Length: 490
Image (cartoon, rainbow, N blue to C red):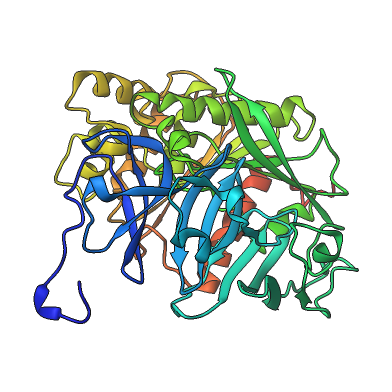
């Protein structure tokens, strides 16, 4: 819309094309567009890589689109923000989240596509243990200050302002960790600014306060069934008894969403007791578009094999005791865990499935449900024979094995969940109880919230109660409680 002439109405930039995505920002008469459109075709073909193109606002037809930034090798553009003097890019480089800024004058007269590294970018200095970056609102177009929140499993949330013009940063605030665990010495916030322009210099690292003296955070690559290397993040106490420690593996693997690895104070309860906490970034989840696509539709089985490969890695490499590994998945992550249990029932000793998507075949055959039509793009359309056979082959509800020992499971559901029907968890639990081995001493628990929705009831105290219940379940089923119901010291 032309802000100087509201009577002109809205401009149509492009008609909808299946698979095509583009995100527009305006800068003094030009559109800067982050898109996966293929520029080599006259029609709108799409690619798995995103690039930034530019065109005049009044000339937005395809033949006026010019690529100004193409991704570097092993780099994926996730998002962008345009300001008066700077372009800020959110990128993934070899699976690591990064932000960088480029001076707009580098782009104004540019005639040929260039890679990010050729545009003299300022890569925001970040802690080496970084796993999660969340940008702030950053609504002031004229500002040269860009605000983000950074964190990792061993670093509480930090609010940082990056000065795009001076190329330095200021730490404004950091979440305080209460209790016996304290931030590492030598990583104080007494000196809150840095003039360093390079990534992760020793002086920059001293600006951040973290828990690395107490806990370790490692990132590994695990080889899956087809040779693909799957990122696995492992967090553990430096006092953990490696090889004999209990562990829990988190997974999601859908919708291109990055698995949340930000700091969570609840995890301190497990880590301080010697647990290993791991996060498997399986295909179907976040990363570049190709990583997401490799775990969708007819390729969905890759997600489950990736998750199983990560679980086996934790055991075989001596991180977790073979009889004390648990799995946890929420929503579509429940589909991941539920299917993996069917495929490898002896791999886990316990599992927690929170508002899980377990009856996928029947759900996708019911178009009256809220998310069914949207989920066709992610999982396939079971009204098509090939898609039906694939979905039915891994549907957790349809593939429960008779007379096989399953791990202990706790399944939670919410009565007012509009995303995943409360009946899915109830059906799955009933069939597991009826079908699987009756001689096992394992627990099969269904816990239904009668007033909450997909994200439970919210609130600080209810979340703490849920976490306490989950941890108590894990400790009981892992045999980590003594006769007095006290936790056994590892």
